[in-house]
Image (spheres, rainbow, N blue to C red):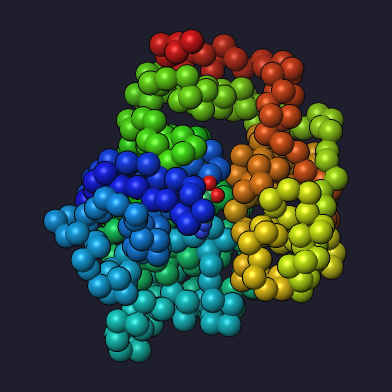
Length: 378
Ligand code: ADP
């Protein structure tokens, strides 16, 4: 069990990322934290393994106060999976999976056997063991990330948008396999996503957070859909109704905004003069998007380490749903659209996408209404 007891986090500068959170993630279950970008999901997750220290309140792992545990030791007992896997590029797949057992001092043979077993468990051919992460597809890397987190068989897993950076078909496969695996393993899991569909599909219980880091509602998925507690939750759950129906429709003409960009190696001053607001998009030599920086926070020239990679990237003529996903997940709130070669085409805001959704016919609406019968909050 993971229990948040009146936990708050204020960042230097005054942002309240998490505001008096009370929440319990029961043993052996998946608890999903869902909400729009900036509502404090990642902060909440990272306070559990103390990559971020709470300003006040207590987080309990069973009957232990995490604030009083040795942070490094505790982290080895908690599996942690992040978006785009976060694998070590210069280590083979096998060595990546064996990272924690190695830290724990397991002998080589045992580490190797365990790593091989896990690769199979997450659905990867063991022929991948000797390869390097860059030789794998995004979905395969994500599987390695899950295997690595499971290596020392931790009872608790923290998962931060683990499936967001892969395309929707691979994402569904990964979700299905993850549920199958969890059926066998029964870990205590705290899972962060901005995608209400994913939350509904994976969560034994779902916690909806609003910007400002307040818990809006905690409920089982079916209850959440049927009884959203207020307009915010109804909107968050209900908005999905429109775009679920549109999931397979191609994106009609969207007005794309030309996004200012900058390359790796640029100085903070260059970044500040290129940026039109708090966020600036970094692209590579082929204009492929790499991630975002906050120019006013830069203390050194731009490198890959500092990039905020949050946010999925959508194709210009891909499904509307993917475009909305890109906008909702982007730290700048501007969704990044790319052409068929993966080069930047422009950006779009979520409200623009929602306007298009409203305007477009929704043939599946009646079916959606049946599934989402709820006490209307407005
Ligand atoms: P989410 O994961 O839901 O997108 P975060 O937990 O990343 O939300 O962020 C919550 C809020 O805290 C946002 O307003 C964000 O800008 C702010 N924030 C996050 N990290 C920092 C930081 N290191 N310093 C200052 N503010 C931060």
